[in-house]
Picture 1 (cartoon, rainbow, N blue to C red):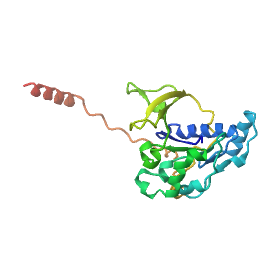
Picture 2: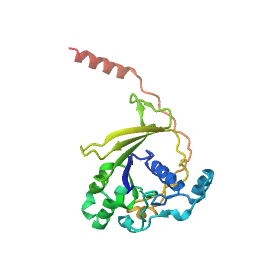
Picture 3: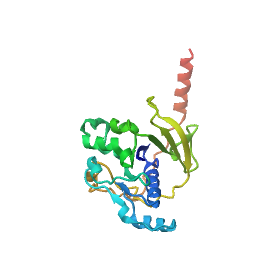
Picture 4: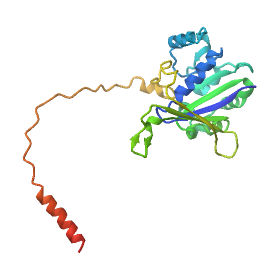
Length: 249
C-alpha cells in the first residue's frame, strides 16, 4: 500500500509542469508506468532514457484521452514495489473547487483508494485553492513552484539569475495549514525539451485549438512631420512659482 496524492502549484511559468515531468520521467526510468495528459515527446524521452542506460518502453507512457473526469477508468493499479504514477496537468479545469458537487462517487472512491491501489496521483494546478476541496483534503504533500525571474530585489531590481524555487509542505497535519518541510533551488531542469510546454491541456482546451493567430510585423516607415517650435518654458516656471508663493500665504 504505497499509493499517495501530491499537488503541485505555482504561477504561470513557475515550473510546476516541469517538476511534474521530472517526477514522471524518473518514475519511468525506474521501470514504472505513467498515465498523463502532459504531452511528452516520445522520441526525446527515448533518447534521454538511452543516455541513462535504459531502453524506453513506450507502452508504459500512456496518454489520458477523453473526459478527465473519468480518468480513473483508464489507469492501472500498481504494486507495493512499483506504484503506478498518474500525472494530471491543469487539474483545476476538470476538478474545480466550484464544481465539487459534480464529482462522481466512483471517482471519489478511486481517490480514496489510491493508497491501497498503489497509485501515486499528482495534480498540477496554478492555485491549490482552485482544486476540488474533496481532493485537497486527501493531498499528502503540497509543492509550490516559483520562477524567481518575477522577483524584484527591494521591489526594484529584477533577479539577475534564472532560477526556480520549489518548496515542499506536509498537508496531513490536520491544523488547516500545510507545514513547510524543505525547499530546493533549480537553475536549469534536465526535463526541459522532453515535453511540449505549449500544449493546451485540461477541460475546454479544444475550443482554443483552432483560435486564429495574430502575426505581428514591423509597421511601414514614413517620413516624420516637421516639429512645431517648442513653447517657451518661462510661463510654466512662472505658474509653478506663483502656486508655491500663494500656497505659503
